[in-house]
Image 1 (cartoon, rainbow, N blue to C red):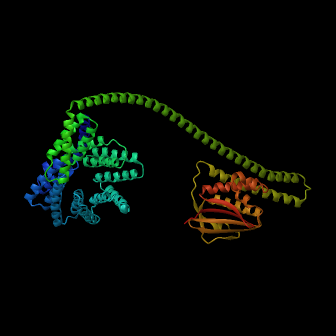
Image 2 (image 1 turned 90 degrees about the vertical axis):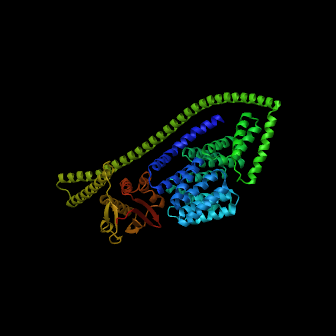
Image 3 (image 1 turned 60 degrees about the horizontal axis):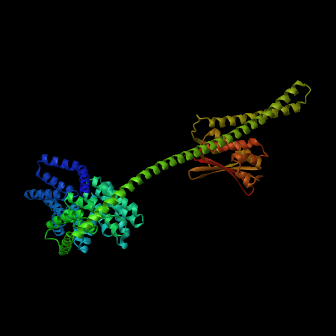
Length: 616
């Protein structure tokens, strides 16, 4: 017990430090304040802040505030002091007196028409009546508090009202929807107010309770335990006690846990905070536990604590508590008489020796377990590190493989592009050689000469056009290329072609790229069919353009592969690699402009289609 109290004292010293700044600021204001009304409000604020940490301080400041407010005839100060006194008495387990003070405070607040304070006092009345066993009255007060709380402009107190509603009906299967609604609303409200830390702890305890009910018991217990520790650090001792008591509820529901250390911690917190009168059931349970364990030192220690508690009990407690205590005191006298027997002393000594031996064995096993755990952890870390290195190496190899495939695809494309250029250069160069030969022979046929000149001209123009297309594509591949979409008028771009295009229809794209795409699609349509027409239509925020030729010589499978690099050459092998290269460049241009391009066969129609964002 000594070690536990030392730990609790250290923890509470941290807790008090966490709240000490706010309390110190209020005390400094109290010393400097000259306005009696404001002085009274500060006293009441101090009383309210202390109720979560120290019941005696809460009571002391409430008494001072009530006396000063009475002399000043300050109604709000009197009502606040009465409410704080009710809280202080409830922390001393004097519920009847607490209800009396809160009833007086409620009358004062109603005269002042202070709805926020009325809501708060109704909430206290609901809780106190329920503790006293008057559940129907407690529910009525709760409903009144909810009715007023939902109408408040500054509704921070409404969060606590909803939490109490959820607490009251958490086990009522017919109200689970309303309980969940209350918790959601409470959380929304609490998050809006920085001072609602207490409410957030209660809400999180409900969320942990839901985990417990869904079978995740260990997570729920760990969560509640962490909430207890954090609330202690935040200076909310009463909240910490509530969290620890929720662990007791899990124990009562059958969860296997050593509950005695938690009960000792609850009692130590309550004792330091002045909630000793609420701690009687905890002390009784602890004492009985150590009596069954034949722990003489602990029995003596908690027997003394029990004697102090019963000595301080007030006569206002109901007969149920008095009878229960009377029975327990008789049981204590019997145990003390039995312990005076020499045989019992010998048994206890033997038990202590056995306990000491077990502790040494446990310490040895714990040390051995720590060594094994350290070794296992080291090996596990090494294994994890090697596993991570293997995964990283696999990822890097996969990336390198993907890059190699991309480079191979690009290299194949460039080789085919070079072969197409070389092929297209051959014809005009041959024509030039043939014309030169004719000019050397002065007796050449003039008609044949003119035909060769025309062929040379057409071939050269075609070659120059290919060069322009290739240069445009190369420009788009450069790292410094920045795509800047501009409005492109489709009707103007398809001038001279049978086209069904609405007036003023525009797409967002690059003019040169789009002209290349149009020429390529029209050339492809002419190659694969005879009758050609163009249709353009608006679809939501994009424009779809279709170049249709019929009848077509392509199958649906061949059409679907026209714009796929690996399959385009095979699909158009009869018509040459130049057209395949054009289609591949068209796909690349569409990707650059944020569009799509595809082909399909419907009946005997080949549809070469692209879609781009509309320009508006």
